[in-house]
Length: 123
Image (cartoon, rainbow, N blue to C red; front, side, top):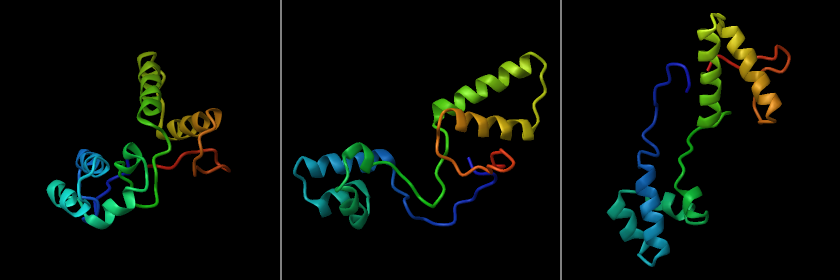
């Protein structure tokens, strides 16, 4: 999660489940405008998302930044950090940045981390 992020727009205020239900209703034969009104989803967004499969079309994505790690991968990192803390190895923020960078490199995950310093960013 981004450090002290505050939302600056009211775009994509719809819920993921609402979009999923709307896409399913339209694919089953409901009218686009009626389904959008019923589920409180913008019509233009619904038109654009109908071109994708339902599961992919219901996903949210706003802005240029995407998370590098999935929630499972983040949980693996958290478990490792907790194990290290239980063994009295004190890891600093810099150590965590190096660890995240090397974890992404070893798992061949595309990232925008600093390759010169071999560190992940603060966020």
